[in-house]
Amino acid sequence: MKRAFLAALGLATTLAMPAAAESLKVGLLLPYSGVYAALGNDIDAGFELGLKTFGAETTATFEILREDTEVKPPVALGKAKKLILQDKVDVVAGIVSSGVLGAVRDMIDGAGVPLIVANAGNDEATGADCSPYITRMSFSNGQVNRPMGAWMAAQGIKKVYTLAPDYAAGRQMIDAFAASYTAAGGEIVGQEFTPFQKTQDFGPYLAQAKASGAEAVYVFYAGGEAISFVKQYDSFGLKAELPLYGSGFLTSPLYVNAEGPAAEGVITALHYVPTIDNAENKTFAEAFTAATGRVPSEFAVQGYDAARALVEATKTGAADREALARALRQVSFDGPRGKTSIDPATNNVVQPIYVYETVAGENGLTQKVLAQLPAEADPVNGCQMAPVSN
Ligand code: PHB
Image 1: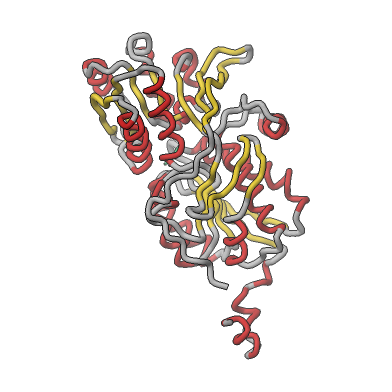
Image 2: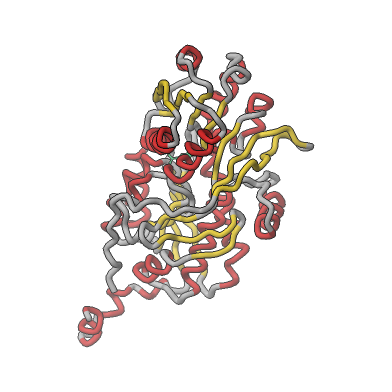
């Protein structure tokens, strides 16, 4: 209606911004420095590979502008403003930290720029704070931890101690695990949240875990913190006595070789491991290793699938921001992680979850899949999605 009215006045073209239709500016908001720098670089490499692999399927072309969020929400907000207001990007992709996602959410929603989340699991971004402009191709914090509660209880583990960094992701991951674990009859005998980006010595927390009477420990740590934690856990002599479990970022293939033998036997769950046996994953893993010399991680696949989702959305003819946002919500494909689709009720990805054990392989540590748990859409968690205006 509004557009027809403006068209009559000859103003519709400025409103719809179709000029960028075939050449889209993509702002990549990622940590290229700080504790999550390696994660950001892997997402970036996956995104580039995704555009290279699928780009020919669309007539759109993509210009990438990169900004370093570090792991600092106020820095990230400044960079988001630059990309949106100054560089006038058509779409933003990336974001690793849940804290950063929380900080940029209102800016993205208010500006009406589509955001493809390529990591940050912040539950609220696809729950109470959902937005028709925010689509997540990675995971939610609840989604990757909830299944492990029931799974561990089913293994007969009755008492668990939990640890995680003290910020949004740590709290949400542990809450989701604890809720499903206790619902299945398990008991959380103690928990601690460690100062984020500041904890170098986990010793005092490990002493508490040991004294708690737990039969196992469940944690979330990622990046540099995961490497220190896993190594200290082993050198503290806890692994044999108190088996270590967690969300799979703990032993990500991106840095598991830096953890070394300390990671062997750790059991975790995630939406992707490079050993998933399907044709899409074989193609992706070979191409990623050829391009980077690395085995692909969950971060790499998230970048790759974010680029694929963008290509899919432009294939529908979507050119302006509103049409792109609408098309992103309908993306669905068979990818390296299995069937991958967006739940239009929350804009969060729906995907299987893999329980895996880190084991010694021929070429270093590898991921042995113990169970594939069925894909489940997240609860809507208060998300009320306003329709994207026409
Ligand atoms: C997050 O902050 O949401 C986050 C960061 C690193 C991960 C997973 C989640 O590996």
